[in-house]
Structures are given as structure tokens and as C-alpha cells.
Amino acid sequence: MDKLEKIWRFPDLRNKIIVAVGLLLVTRILSHIPLPGVDLQRLQVFFQQNQAFGLLNMFSGGTMSNFSIILMGVGPYITSSIIFQLLGMIFPSVEQMQKEEEGKQKINQWTRMATIPLALIQAFSMLVILRNQGIIPQWDVLSLSIMLISVCAGTILLMWIGEIISEKGIGNGVSLIIALGILSSFPEQIRNTAALVSSGDLTKVIGVSSFLLILLITIAGVIFVQEGQRNIPISYAKSMRFGTNGGISNHLPIRVNIAGVIPIIFAMSLLVMPGVISKYLENARTPWLRQAQNL
Image (cartoon, rainbow, N blue to C red; front, top):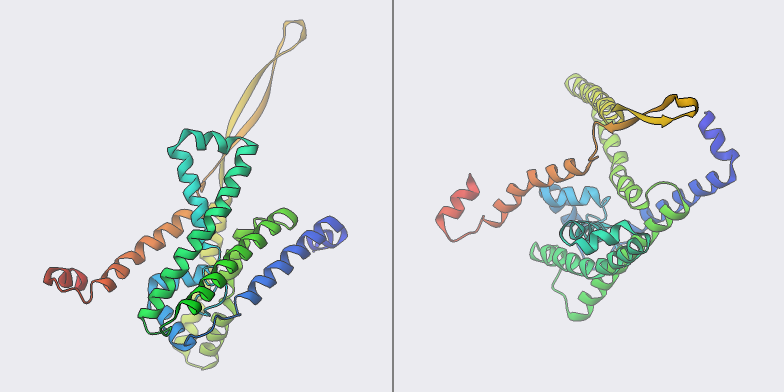
């Protein structure tokens, strides 16, 4: 309660939180503005049955299953950021730019510019997949252009909102948009859980209670590991007057989990890849490929 009281006591902090919350609400409104010409029921069934696209839909906050104007979310922007991070490991000139303030600004500008073609490519690929599934009807050049421009503009708008949250709000804007997108599915999950409990079936009640207990233990374990760190003691020698020596003691904190959630996201992506590959091999004409798909 003291923390909440301080938030409203200091105008600067209060304004930052209001800006961040207001812009995050705008992103949730945008996620429910659909593009025209799609069977939403078939679309939602498709994402429920396909693990890979269900994972993408979760990280996009349901924007894909809603076929909204921010269909691709901030995915193209993240892809562009990763590309330039990897280029810094390959090309020494880019690595040197990443260490300089002016160079960082140039790389940020290049990242924004590269987001546009990546958004167009990813949006077109997604539209082709949905068309092949019969979810989107055949399009002409005009309708395809409208959809691609709308989705690309939605991604750029989200990227801009994320940067405003980072600059004038509180926290990392892009991370908050992704986190809110994942949390957006919680009300539906809570409603489904409540329906199971209210059914009166003792087995289901025990199952839900066990799940909630495991959930709490998992959350506590994640926080415990995430906050854990090893303090390495460091002593600095210091010359003092009259021939005496002194020193300054400090410590270097080494976190247990340095990489954050990135390895988890990659691991989840790798785990769904075999299922995705097997889907493509279902109708293969080569016998051994069909056998590999079954395996």
C-alpha cells in the first residue's frame, strides 16, 4: 500500500504510469478491430488445432485469431532487432556502432526501416497460409494490397506505441505489449476453470485445485531463480597518506538466470517444429517421407 501511495503522491511517476496504461489499453482495442473477409470461427479452430500457430497467437495476444489490423503484433520489429544484434556479432563495424551513442541511434533507425519489409513478408505469408486453409476467400490485387498495408501499418503503430511507453511511460514498451497480450487470455481461462469447479464433479475440483497449487509453486520457483544471484567479492587497493594502505570492498553480482525468458521461447519454438514439419509431409508423394511424417 505504501508503494501505491507513493505512485499517486509523485506527479512524474503517476503521469508515466497513466501514459503506459493508457497506451496499453489502446493496443488491446486495436487487437479487436478485424480485417474484412474472414471466417472467424474457422480461424479460431485453426489456431487451436495447430501448435505452432497457436504459440504465435499466444505471443501476439490473440491478434491472429481475431484477424485484427495488428495481425503480426510486434513480431517483425523483434525479428528486425534480432537480425541487427546478430550482424553486430558478424561485422566488427556494426559491433563498433553498437557501442557508440550515435551508432546506436543509426541502428535503431535501420531496425525501424527493416521492420516494414519484414512486416509485409510475414503478413503475406500468413495470409497465404490462411487462404490455403480456406479461412480467407480468394482475393484480388486491391483487397490483398489493403490487407497488407493495414497489417504493416498496425505493426508500425505498435512499434511506435512501444517506443513511446519506453520513453515517456515506465518499463520496456515492447515487452509490456507482449506481456499484456499473453495475459489477455487469462480471463477466458479463469472463466473456463470456474465452470469446471461449479459443475460439482469432485474429480474436476481436485484436478483444478492440484493445478492451482502446482501453478503457485511454479511461480514461486521462477521468481526465486530469477532473483537469485551470486555476489563475487572484489577488493580495490587504495593508497593512503603516511605510507598506509587501505582498500575498498565491493561485490560483482552474477545472476543465476542471465538470459531471461529467451531460451524458454526458443525451446518452445523448437518443440513445436516437428509437428509443423510433419504437417507439410502429410500429402508427400514419396513413400519414405510419408513414413517419416507418421514417425
